Image 1 (cartoon, helix red, strand yellow):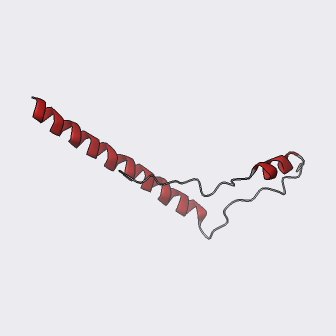
Image 2 (cartoon, one colour):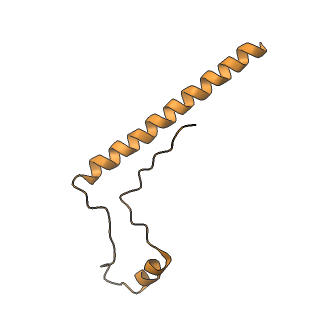
Image 3 (cartoon, helix red, strand yellow):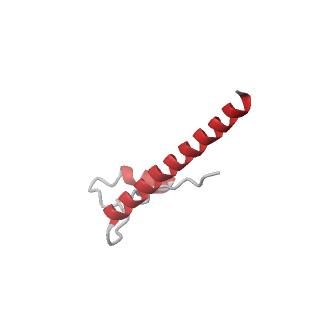
Length: 73
């Protein structure tokens, strides 16, 4: 019903081979992260978007439960 947003875009998502290569990367030169203009602001915006979606879903579920309780009672 509700679309789930994600706020993990700042983290690297390596493949299996990339992960295996990191074992030998002792200098840490293989790390790659999102280097957009303002990553902290974007991450906070996405995080609060997820919180807002959770609140909307909780309100919807509460309303559904209230409607069912009225029908039964």
